[in-house]
Image 1 (cartoon, rainbow, N blue to C red):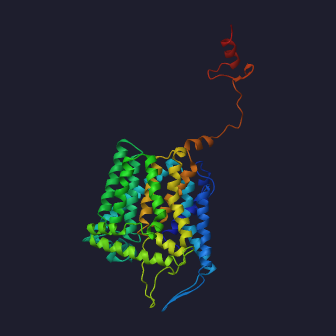
Image 2: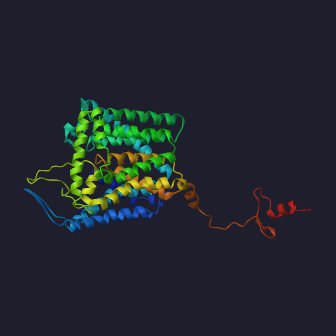
Image 3: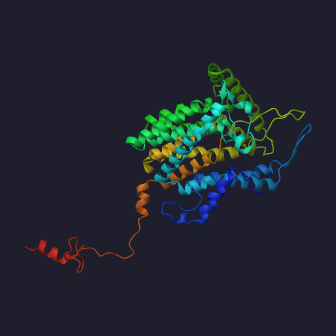
Length: 444
């Protein structure tokens, strides 16, 4: 029932512990409370957590496929899953509370770019020497080595779960570097542009076509459009991603055209994409058997034959969520991920977002696009989502700063009154009594 302790959960829990033990909560630039104040994210979080119990209640039956036995869900499993969800949302809550102000969000962008720049040297080492660092340091390879041999070279993964995770991280940091170049000028702008091109070169050498295409598509938006247009385009992408399962189920996705394009780029990539799409069709059909609250975990949403052989492999995060938690969990979780882009687009005139916020929004959109073919959701994804929801809640920064000004405890008497002229005892900035100045100016 305890949460899994790994490199995703340990940093989040330790960071939360440090925040609770430190005096950071007394900082003036901290949003109050731990939950968002807006109703929409509150409702989405509640539905995300509460729907877990409904998934457990609707899946008490065990499943048997030949020699394979999949247990039914118990109330214990519901509490365990909810606890895991809460731990995964810790970066969301921290970012919403402590990374809502523009200068804090610029700091977050800088952190992403520095991390990407430092990680690029390790990635380039593996591009040349093959992905060996995880085996050299930790003694094991986290995935299939065959999947990291591409086009006569290698796809790096360094210390992540898969090379696709590393690739989308580089795509995100590229957008962050070029977004920072829009916030500064002079030599500092040149510095961020140079880092952005360096990261783009690293990604292009990493043999990950999907992440490179995402970065290339969004890069002109970062470089040539203003904040309002960037928010509108982010909102359009977010709506498409949120509605993708319905569009996919209705057959409106041009699958044949996409496969033809991929075939022209690389037959191996086209075969991989076709395999993913075929699995999506099988898994989507399986999900439709329990569409509202899903099948739950333990592999219950997978497709097996009568001999217990698993016929499907889950790649896209969206199909994993639909299969395990049904459409209720999908709308809650992906609504929490996608809706800040839509809300921010409508709240632009009121809040006046800067390039640091739209930069985070574009980074989030890049990650969301990659969640369609891959399951590349990480604590960094929730960190971006929380920071953006916090910025929306903050509103216009000048209004907030004016409201947070410390008001004097003692009441200052005015130099003049509406009736009767100056008040006795008050002085003007030049040190002369107000009554004397008033009498001299009004002598006839």
